[in-house]
Length: 179
Image (cartoon, rainbow, N blue to C red; front, side, top):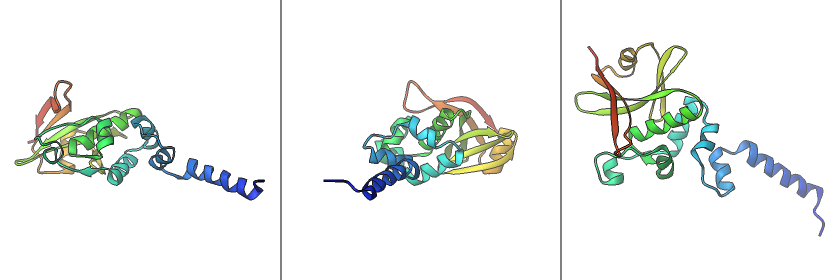
């Protein structure tokens, strides 16, 4: 049986479509292989792309509901697998993808009277900016106090944190308050 020129053309166009126009996740599914953090990071090369990806693919769920305990910080790889987590899981994922793209960042816990929240902070153009879950907040803040004031005036204390190597939680590296 002969294959027509049109059939070859259709096959070629299909390959081009899969290669160029499909998202990283869709290509990984078409190729039937798991999506790695490194492959994903090569496609998510801006803070906005990272936030948009998290908005589309991850769901907010408390540690209590997901793991049956008060606190568990998932690794970025684990979060990519579970696709569910709370603020520090989103922040850790964003921080790792930024790092894989050569963008320095850190995690910031912010505290109000009744709550705590974790965000990923990066500096660009001399100003601090935040990836807060699925949103990028661009500011004109040149200090951390200024950043906190711009994004939420009700936050009173803050701490630079990292995931703890000895537990499933975070470790405070530096704590500071606002006046």
